[in-house]
Length: 351
View: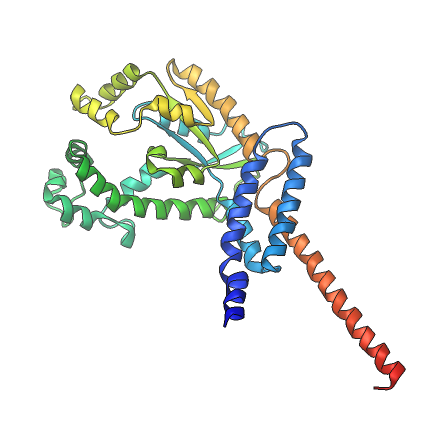
């Protein structure tokens, strides 16, 4: 019985998560820019492959875990409300008019868009939280402009007025929406990381020099340690607090200054976020200055994440597969030698 449990653990249960963890740690290590990076990265990957294969007895589930773990390495883009994060997101995603084939490509996954979609009654099916929110907060959160429709949309402004005044209600809202948002986000990260999402138009996109999956997520740090561990590189868009308040009030003139302060206070202060970030983009000046910072950040992050060493799913997976093949070949050769020895003994002794 104990041997069966051991076999189940080493051959079925452990290989997949172990592959994910090992490849994720490896990918984080190789993102560090230091001298002799190429040699160091190859040594790290080869060592990890040998160690991982020896631990899980050449299980193919380990290889699958390596592929998933390497694909789940997005860049996180966050910041405070009204700091200019959406503007930075659009600048990162935008391609130059020259349409170069070797241009860096940033694929943006908009978590705020996901949060908006799950509030709709008929868009995401079972992932919609429409009925749960109406049951929890009442029909007072529904839009009054759509009285004639069967299922009027949720008015985000009304819902916001309720939860930003009451911490308990805000926690309840988060407990309903966050699991759905995280589920959809992780699915899209995996699909984009494996490059399985085809273009909506059906046309094949031209080959880019470096491809980076970036998640635009407002509440990255508010999500706690699991969210911080998910993102190997974190970009924070920051600005001065008084400028943040001014921009929020200008963007939402129907909100009072006190309501604007409540919304800002509901998040971690942007300077604290900036202190924990790998890259900080300051949006205290004009759009021209912001564009220059984004261009530099785009090139640096693409180099760190994808780089000239073609890091990613294919490289680490092939290293692991190669070590597994060598291990298999060695085992098969030993078996052949034992069989040959038996034949020789039988021939000599006639048995």
